[in-house]
Every structure is written in structure tokens, then in C-alpha cells.
Amino acid sequence: MFKLATFLIPIILGVLGYKFSANRLAKKLETQSSLLEDPIIVALVNKIAHSLDLSKIRVYVLEDLNLNGLASPNGKVFITRGFLEKYYAGFVSAEELTGVIAHELGHLALGHTKKRMVTYTVQNTLQVGLSLILSRIIPIIGNYLSVMLLRLVTAKLSRMDEYQADEYAAALMTKIGLGVNPLIDLFRKLEKLNTNHDQTLDWLHSHPSPRDRILAIRKNENRWKGPNHLKLRD
Image 1: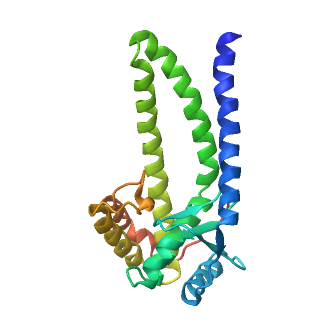
Image 2 (image 1 turned 90 degrees about the vertical axis):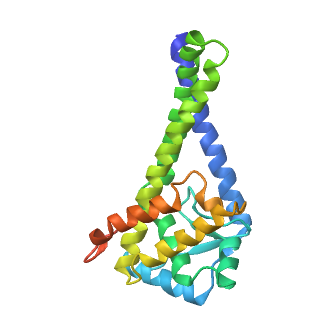
Image 3 (image 1 turned 135 degrees about the vertical axis):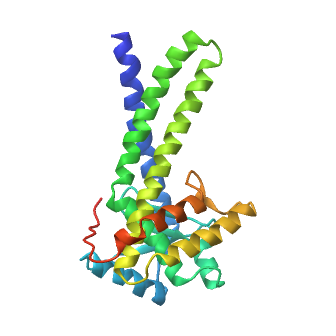
């Protein structure tokens, strides 16, 4: 009974913890964001909606000066004010910013927002189990080792999700006639910012390097030419 409780409690706490975090994030996004109304970007997003047989895709602007895009647990897509300011300043183009939006749509379409709850719960459970095992084998530092190992695994899973969302975005951008170059150009610009240690560049945290993402897009570019049948789901 004790061993069963040892594993059940982390699972329950993981689910509750994720739901609490998701609800808190949803409230923050709702109160600190507004509908994106830039006519050029909205026109490009409308092309995406049409290609996915959707009547409308709404994108919201989060009042945050960091450079980031995100998909919320309730299925909404956001770009930050920081990204939009870079667009107004001419650092990124409307097509490149549309690439960010397409990437976040990829997270929704591929079920990554729901997958994160499972990953979060499993991580909590495994951490308890590994901690108990490693603490017996390597006293004192066993717990720290379990945390480090699980962080490595989580980071690996996160990078896999990013590659998949990039693939979806590249296919979608190709389908609406923009091609993959806006995404590649964006990653090159973000790589430059990352090299300069720009603290506002949240969109690259826990992600593959821009160079690796560009290589992956180029490698699969031919797969996205021709008819596509992408569907948005969550």
C-alpha cells in the first residue's frame, strides 16, 4: 500500500499542479492580451484559415516585451508585444511573424498542449521513483541526479515537439504560397539575437538551435511541395 501511494501521490499532484498552472496561465493571457488587428498579418492568417478549411483563426497579442509565441491550453494562439514591435521596427517581416503563428498552430494541431500535461505528470512520478532508487545507491546526491536526468529527458521531448511544429509550419507556409524562406530568415535573425545574448528571446528557450532547425527544414523542404491536407485540431 505504501509503495502504491508513493507513486499515486505524485501522479495526482502532477495533474492538479498542471491544471492549476494551466488555469493561471489562461487567466493571465485573457487579462493581458488583445486581438491582433494588423491588416497585413491578419490577411496572411486568413489565408492559413482558408487553407485549413476554417472560417477564422484569431491571434492575440500578449502584452509582454519578450520575443515569444505560444499556444494556450484552451487552444488560443498568441504572439508577444515584443515580437510585434520588432515587426513594426522592420526587424521581422509580416511573413516571418506569420511563420511564428503557423508554428504555434502546429503545436495545437499536433496535440502538444495536451501532451505537456501527460509529460508533466509522468515527470513528477518518475522523479519520485528515481530519487528513491538513486538515493539508496548514491546517498545525498541521488536526488539531484534524478532531477538532472529528468530535465535532460524533458528537454529532449521539448526539442522533438519544436521540430514537429516547425515541420507543420513549413508545410503550412508552403501551402499558402509563402514557402519556407520566411521561417529560415526568421531563425537566422533569432540566431543573431541569441549570439548577442538577448535576454528577451524567450522563443528559443528549451528549443533546438536556430541552425539545427534551419537544417531540418531544408532537409524536408521537398516534402512540403505540392498538395497538402493539413488539419487543425486540439
